[in-house]
Length: 277
Image 1 (cartoon, rainbow, N blue to C red):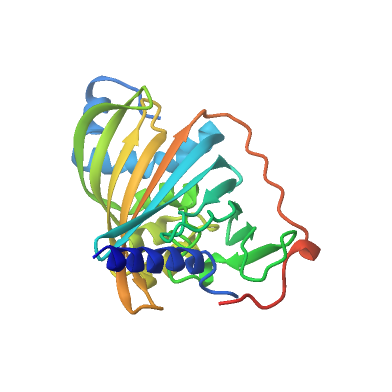
Image 2: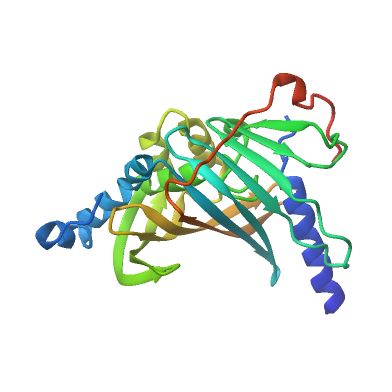
């Protein structure tokens, strides 16, 4: 039994590592306004405006967690960094899980997020340590909602543009901040149609590539309408193993206004060679 669990965990870790390069190539008012934000179409409208609230905030620090499960085995990838919502650019340091056999931990992967592109450093798989790998997110079957091991914070907010069947759960706190908790589903196709030009191609790819276009979520907004936390549950098709992997992606945003400096690599710093399988 232990051997079977280790084998499943090894498959997931391998899938995660391969997945990191699978394609080789403002609502603080009271009274009626507050009530509308909690029910029916008002709740849907509030969630769909979360992107605008983040753009007004400018930037924030971000913490990410992505859990993948299959056959009773679960692995978690964690990320930490900052994001500029006006430029739709961010920088994350992503940490892969330890190998189940007890091998040394993977080196953290530095990721730069930009409209239409994902850049990775310390990718491994034959890529020199001083080189970046660039991936066009529109060419990924999941639109980089899963591949990078962290969902792009702007894409996570834009997914809420496809919010449907939303229920207001109630007031709670996230990291000590009072928030409103909403639960519902997001339609990937609708989100893609309503997305910004920078995110639309990737979300359109995700709408075609996921096992289902309906994505359950739990979203938490503060009294300024800013997204503080969101958790999505994706059903992702693993083409390599011809199976479906359950993926839960969580984004936590805090320290709004903190600087998010992102400098994209020069073309000479991008690896153009073959990447090992």
